[in-house]
Image (cartoon, rainbow, N blue to C red):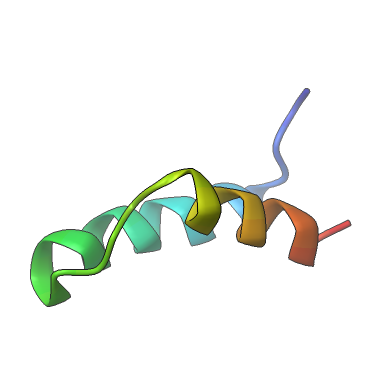
Length: 38
């Protein structure tokens, strides 16, 4: 499965938000991003 640039960018942003704002970078977060772009 190839990810679009938009999805990739959202995942990278989530990863950095995790470090800055104590968000959880987990399976649910990733699934939510993938489902929102279908």
